[in-house]
Length: 520
Image (cartoon, rainbow, N blue to C red; front, side, top):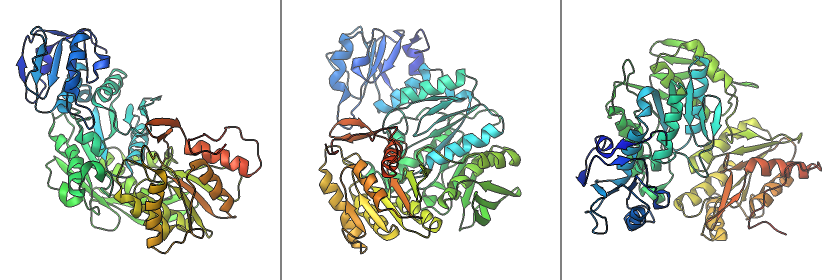
């Protein structure tokens, strides 16, 4: 924590609603929602979580020296009178506002662009970072891969997209203290629903798309979309001098009717195949990428990108729209887009001199997998071979959908593990296989079951012939694989390179990571 202390009553002024029982002049030395982290003088924030009720840990927090307790229930009798109690409607929301207060509302001192959507968030924020760096702006970024403060990179954990409220505000405070001018922040639907970015003062909100994903959490697509819409409602936060509140919407996406009515100072739409404020025409695929003309209300200009996938055109238009709304010069937009040749774990090529193409990609939703396979098809006259799985204890419906996408758009599918957690891996694979079969794929011919992911990648490489494309999808940049409740070290890029080296008879400089399903 960067502050020495703050008064409880000062921090409570940032809450939208609360009832205080006890002394408001209590000195606060920190805050946490984890009773194991409580130290004397801390605020302990209790709320009902997905699996744990934080109110059950109030006695432990008091015993550890908590100066104040924040909770969602009537004041428990177990709290001593000298300990302040603050009742709030929503503990997660209160934690976010208290975290922002503790760190001095860092987002108010920078321009903040939030990017949400099912797919394309990381590529879009990387494009934005490249554009604004080309414009000589001091940038910060919080993405699924890591956080970046200037040229310094910081890990944000395993399976993380949007960090929790306290680390988010801490990162923003580091950025502010480093002189950052503009921040790009991925806002996931679950992160938005859990108030991880509540109390961040966003200036521009961008949506990529809203497709089938995370319905185990959101239950319906409509609820999923409305959770993402929270980012756009957050544009109603405090206005910064000279900075407009802008919403950037995909006019072709199913989310557009839900989002277009949310107020903002300015709204920009983008599209490839529909009328919109920002569009691309004359797209030409070249060996070194794509060239096209961007049309917008201020005129038109040529743009070139090394990213060859058609779906990345939407990410580019989203980033360009946000940049134009903040009056970034066209020349800097052109330089920034042209400078981004790849994003970690996104269509990342692994080359060991083989006569076919090997790729690692993060596509882990039905739409993303379909778009990835469609984009790879015109890049080869050979076959497209895909290796992927579906996560356990997550959206069950998508398994058949992803099997259908693979069966329809890949020539060969190898179904394998992807974070099975406590579910039966063979059952997950069977559900994916049902999707493959539904579109005419046949086991042993156009699809195969290989539960161990390392073995599956090696198997796909053995199937590959000259000119084919092998893509391992679903893990991308991630650094672990979950079996049961244990996170095992895993990196698809390392696994692909090790399998390629072994396949080619080369010395394996980085051994294949081992999983519980590994043989021997």
